[in-house]
Length: 119
Length: 108
Image (tube, rainbow over all chains, first blue to last red; front, side, top):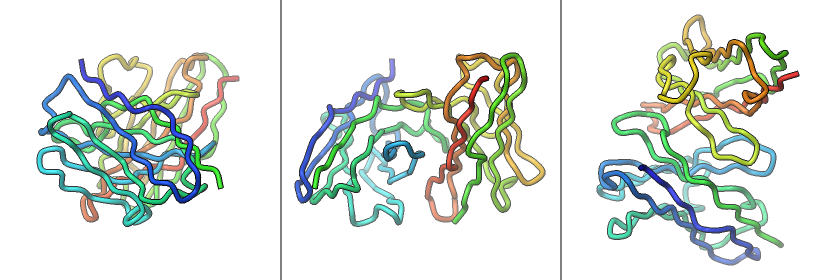
Protein backbone atom coordinates (compact mmCIF):
# COMPACT_ATOMS: atom_id res chain seq x y z
CA UNK A 1 0.00 0.00 0.00
CA UNK A 2 1.36 3.39 -1.02
CA UNK A 3 1.61 5.79 1.90
CA UNK A 4 2.93 9.32 2.33
CA UNK A 5 3.09 10.25 6.00
CA UNK A 6 4.04 13.79 6.87
CA UNK A 7 5.59 15.14 10.03
CA UNK A 8 3.44 16.85 12.62
CA UNK A 9 2.33 20.41 13.00
CA UNK A 10 4.98 23.04 13.65
CA UNK A 11 4.69 26.31 15.55
CA UNK A 12 7.56 28.69 14.86
CA UNK A 13 8.52 32.31 15.29
CA UNK A 14 9.42 34.58 12.44
CA UNK A 15 13.09 34.09 11.61
CA UNK A 16 13.25 30.45 12.73
CA UNK A 17 14.31 27.62 10.46
CA UNK A 18 12.04 24.64 9.89
CA UNK A 19 12.11 21.34 8.01
CA UNK A 20 9.07 19.20 7.41
CA UNK A 21 9.17 15.66 6.12
CA UNK A 22 7.21 13.26 3.95
CA UNK A 23 8.01 9.63 4.68
CA UNK A 24 6.97 7.28 1.91
CA UNK A 25 6.38 3.56 1.68
CA UNK A 26 4.83 0.97 -0.58
CA UNK A 27 6.53 1.91 -3.85
CA UNK A 28 9.92 2.13 -5.53
CA UNK A 29 11.15 5.44 -4.13
CA UNK A 30 13.74 6.25 -6.77
CA UNK A 31 11.31 5.83 -9.68
CA UNK A 32 9.09 8.72 -8.71
CA UNK A 33 8.79 12.46 -8.26
CA UNK A 34 7.44 14.07 -5.10
CA UNK A 35 5.95 17.56 -5.17
CA UNK A 36 5.20 20.01 -2.40
CA UNK A 37 1.98 22.04 -2.46
CA UNK A 38 1.04 24.97 -0.24
CA UNK A 39 -2.46 25.82 0.90
CA UNK A 40 -2.76 29.07 2.78
CA UNK A 41 -5.70 29.47 5.16
CA UNK A 42 -8.94 29.45 3.20
CA UNK A 43 -7.11 29.53 -0.13
CA UNK A 44 -6.35 27.25 -3.05
CA UNK A 45 -3.53 24.89 -3.93
CA UNK A 46 -0.14 26.31 -4.98
CA UNK A 47 2.60 24.16 -6.46
CA UNK A 48 5.96 24.88 -4.82
CA UNK A 49 8.30 22.49 -6.57
CA UNK A 50 9.13 18.91 -7.33
CA UNK A 51 12.03 16.54 -6.76
CA UNK A 52 12.95 13.42 -8.69
CA UNK A 53 13.79 10.89 -6.04
CA UNK A 54 16.22 8.98 -8.27
CA UNK A 55 18.81 11.75 -8.43
CA UNK A 56 17.31 14.55 -6.27
CA UNK A 57 16.99 16.88 -9.25
CA UNK A 58 14.61 19.65 -8.30
CA UNK A 59 12.40 22.15 -10.12
CA UNK A 60 10.90 25.08 -8.26
CA UNK A 61 7.98 27.35 -8.92
CA UNK A 62 9.28 30.89 -9.54
CA UNK A 63 7.13 31.96 -6.59
CA UNK A 64 9.13 29.78 -4.22
CA UNK A 65 12.58 29.65 -5.83
CA UNK A 66 15.18 30.73 -3.29
CA UNK A 67 12.68 30.73 -0.42
CA UNK A 68 12.56 27.00 0.29
CA UNK A 69 14.70 23.94 -0.34
CA UNK A 70 13.33 20.58 -1.40
CA UNK A 71 15.49 17.55 -0.72
CA UNK A 72 15.26 13.79 -0.30
CA UNK A 73 17.03 10.98 1.55
CA UNK A 74 16.91 7.72 -0.36
CA UNK A 75 18.04 5.73 2.65
CA UNK A 76 14.95 6.89 4.56
CA UNK A 77 12.52 7.02 1.61
CA UNK A 78 11.75 10.55 2.77
CA UNK A 79 11.37 13.92 1.09
CA UNK A 80 11.82 17.23 2.88
CA UNK A 81 10.78 20.87 2.65
CA UNK A 82 13.08 23.31 4.40
CA UNK A 83 13.07 26.99 5.21
CA UNK A 84 16.15 28.81 6.51
CA UNK A 85 13.98 31.70 7.67
CA UNK A 86 10.22 31.52 8.01
CA UNK A 87 7.87 34.46 8.04
CA UNK A 88 4.30 34.89 9.21
CA UNK A 89 3.16 34.71 5.59
CA UNK A 90 4.45 31.12 5.44
CA UNK A 91 1.61 30.05 7.73
CA UNK A 92 -0.17 27.36 5.75
CA UNK A 93 -0.80 23.66 5.32
CA UNK A 94 1.87 21.97 3.24
CA UNK A 95 1.14 18.77 1.34
CA UNK A 96 3.53 16.37 -0.30
CA UNK A 97 2.18 14.47 -3.28
CA UNK A 98 3.53 11.67 -5.44
CA UNK A 99 3.56 12.12 -9.17
CA UNK A 100 2.04 9.04 -10.76
CA UNK A 101 4.68 7.02 -12.60
CA UNK A 102 5.50 8.52 -15.98
CA UNK A 103 2.54 10.87 -15.60
CA UNK A 104 1.72 14.49 -14.94
CA UNK A 105 -0.77 14.19 -12.08
CA UNK A 106 -0.59 13.44 -8.36
CA UNK A 107 -1.94 10.04 -7.42
CA UNK A 108 -1.14 9.96 -3.69
CA UNK A 109 -1.01 12.76 -1.15
CA UNK A 110 0.28 13.15 2.36
CA UNK A 111 -2.11 14.20 5.08
CA UNK A 112 -0.67 17.72 5.23
CA UNK A 113 1.49 19.54 7.76
CA UNK A 114 0.26 22.75 9.36
CA UNK A 115 2.98 25.33 9.80
CA UNK A 116 2.08 28.28 12.01
CA UNK A 117 4.49 31.18 12.16
CA UNK A 118 4.01 33.99 14.64
CA UNK A 119 5.57 37.36 14.30
CA UNK B 1 2.84 30.57 -18.23
CA UNK B 2 -0.74 29.35 -18.16
CA UNK B 3 -3.40 30.69 -15.84
CA UNK B 4 -6.24 28.24 -15.20
CA UNK B 5 -9.55 30.00 -14.59
CA UNK B 6 -12.30 28.32 -12.60
CA UNK B 7 -15.60 29.73 -11.34
CA UNK B 8 -15.29 30.38 -7.59
CA UNK B 9 -18.50 28.56 -6.79
CA UNK B 10 -21.13 26.26 -8.25
CA UNK B 11 -24.36 25.27 -6.51
CA UNK B 12 -26.64 22.42 -7.45
CA UNK B 13 -29.55 20.56 -5.90
CA UNK B 14 -29.17 16.88 -5.05
CA UNK B 15 -29.76 14.67 -8.04
CA UNK B 16 -28.89 17.38 -10.53
CA UNK B 17 -25.76 17.76 -12.64
CA UNK B 18 -22.81 19.94 -11.64
CA UNK B 19 -20.49 21.33 -14.29
CA UNK B 20 -17.18 22.94 -13.37
CA UNK B 21 -15.04 24.56 -16.04
CA UNK B 22 -11.32 25.22 -16.28
CA UNK B 23 -10.29 27.74 -18.89
CA UNK B 24 -6.95 28.79 -20.35
CA UNK B 25 -5.39 29.77 -23.64
CA UNK B 26 -4.79 26.68 -25.69
CA UNK B 27 -6.01 24.37 -22.91
CA UNK B 28 -7.11 21.90 -25.55
CA UNK B 29 -3.45 21.12 -26.15
CA UNK B 30 -2.87 20.28 -22.47
CA UNK B 31 -3.75 17.29 -20.35
CA UNK B 32 -6.01 18.40 -17.52
CA UNK B 33 -6.38 16.64 -14.19
CA UNK B 34 -9.06 17.26 -11.56
CA UNK B 35 -8.91 16.94 -7.77
CA UNK B 36 -11.59 16.94 -5.10
CA UNK B 37 -10.70 18.32 -1.69
CA UNK B 38 -13.19 17.84 1.10
CA UNK B 39 -13.00 20.05 4.14
CA UNK B 40 -9.96 19.27 6.28
CA UNK B 41 -8.66 16.57 3.95
CA UNK B 42 -5.94 16.17 1.35
CA UNK B 43 -6.92 16.42 -2.32
CA UNK B 44 -7.88 13.29 -4.24
CA UNK B 45 -7.58 12.90 -8.01
CA UNK B 46 -10.99 12.30 -9.59
CA UNK B 47 -10.14 12.73 -13.28
CA UNK B 48 -6.76 12.31 -14.99
CA UNK B 49 -5.73 13.15 -18.53
CA UNK B 50 -8.94 15.01 -19.35
CA UNK B 51 -11.32 12.09 -18.97
CA UNK B 52 -9.64 9.17 -17.18
CA UNK B 53 -11.36 8.02 -14.01
CA UNK B 54 -9.10 6.46 -11.34
CA UNK B 55 -10.29 3.32 -9.63
CA UNK B 56 -12.70 4.07 -6.84
CA UNK B 57 -14.12 7.19 -8.45
CA UNK B 58 -17.81 6.79 -9.31
CA UNK B 59 -18.96 6.78 -12.91
CA UNK B 60 -20.94 9.91 -12.07
CA UNK B 61 -17.66 11.80 -12.47
CA UNK B 62 -16.56 12.57 -16.02
CA UNK B 63 -14.29 15.00 -17.79
CA UNK B 64 -13.78 16.55 -21.17
CA UNK B 65 -11.43 19.03 -22.78
CA UNK B 66 -12.52 20.84 -25.93
CA UNK B 67 -13.87 24.14 -27.13
CA UNK B 68 -11.49 26.24 -25.11
CA UNK B 69 -12.21 24.78 -21.69
CA UNK B 70 -11.82 21.62 -19.72
CA UNK B 71 -14.93 20.49 -17.89
CA UNK B 72 -15.61 18.30 -14.88
CA UNK B 73 -19.15 16.96 -14.81
CA UNK B 74 -20.76 15.30 -11.84
CA UNK B 75 -24.14 13.73 -12.50
CA UNK B 76 -26.73 12.79 -9.88
CA UNK B 77 -24.99 14.99 -7.35
CA UNK B 78 -25.02 13.81 -3.74
CA UNK B 79 -24.36 15.62 -0.49
CA UNK B 80 -21.02 13.80 -0.30
CA UNK B 81 -19.83 15.53 -3.47
CA UNK B 82 -19.70 18.86 -1.67
CA UNK B 83 -16.05 19.93 -1.79
CA UNK B 84 -13.53 22.21 -3.46
CA UNK B 85 -12.49 21.09 -6.94
CA UNK B 86 -9.22 22.02 -8.64
CA UNK B 87 -7.97 21.56 -12.16
CA UNK B 88 -4.26 21.07 -12.81
CA UNK B 89 -1.89 20.93 -15.77
CA UNK B 90 1.83 20.28 -16.12
CA UNK B 91 3.27 22.83 -18.49
CA UNK B 92 5.84 20.99 -20.57
CA UNK B 93 7.53 24.18 -21.78
CA UNK B 94 8.41 25.42 -18.31
CA UNK B 95 8.21 22.05 -16.51
CA UNK B 96 5.98 23.75 -13.97
CA UNK B 97 2.72 22.59 -12.42
CA UNK B 98 -0.27 24.91 -12.46
CA UNK B 99 -3.44 24.64 -10.39
CA UNK B 100 -6.67 26.43 -11.08
CA UNK B 101 -8.01 28.70 -8.38
CA UNK B 102 -10.55 26.13 -7.25
CA UNK B 103 -14.34 25.88 -7.34
CA UNK B 104 -16.45 25.36 -4.25
CA UNK B 105 -19.28 22.97 -5.04
CA UNK B 106 -22.27 23.45 -2.77
CA UNK B 107 -25.06 20.89 -2.70
CA UNK B 108 -28.23 22.75 -1.83
